[in-house]
Length: 361
Image 1 (cartoon, helix red, strand yellow):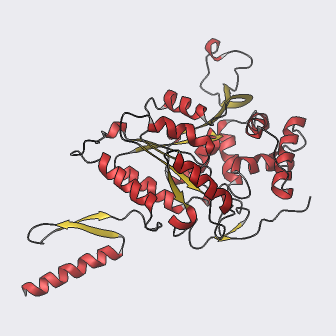
Image 2 (tube, one colour):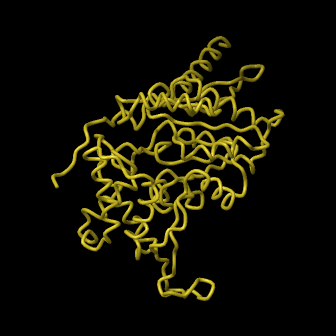
């Protein structure tokens, strides 16, 4: 009977293991197994994942010299290309502006000339491969501020979510709003379980980011992004310090750009809004390097990760360019996550890469 009980207990443990739970240790008499969740079902065994887990386990171990209290376990994530797709065929917010200005019947005949020019630059880039003008990130930011001016926060949120329901260009089986990297969602879950607080720190519009990450449970107060000036609906030309908002007013977007949240601006915004230096950062481009360097200046043990878009079979990537960047990021002291080698899946097994399609003009 004792032998049979042991056999049944071990069988039960293996069944649990098959559902994503792994046994780490057991009590002396084997009467009670201690188990921990395997968070990384979508990852291959790889250097980046090993480094991440080793880092997190070290800084969350009270016996470690590198232990970090929960209130200081701050992680920051870029959004586009870090945990949300950006290769369809360009950033979500660029696609959205192109649609708003050139296709949306409620606005396309109202767009100012400079806004129309920015939208056409995006269209020519994605359809013809025409290079974008220098410093287009700022050109786009100023154009986007104008294109959505006059919308209430609620109206803009609904507008973004409605566009996000469209099929993601270049993929079958996925909308824009579903284009999360599955392995990176597992990182969020893992960090949450380990007492980390994570923030989205993106170059995209703050309210676009809020709308996109809402389905994965990231609260609005943990999203930092590009900002435009807001006013209340009856404020007029008065400055906020001279005006008292009434109960029945709404907040309105204006055409005044406050900040494009890239490079060192990310660091400034983190300092102002979070008030602590992150100990863990994730990004995918040079626009995230300042955030990484800020993280690595921390008094605590810290770590920074860069994703490279090197998977030409499952995503619209440029592997040659990605590998060049990988060398650069490693030389900068960042860990590199290869989407081709490290991810078992990117968007999920039912999503397929297909050719980009464009309606006739």
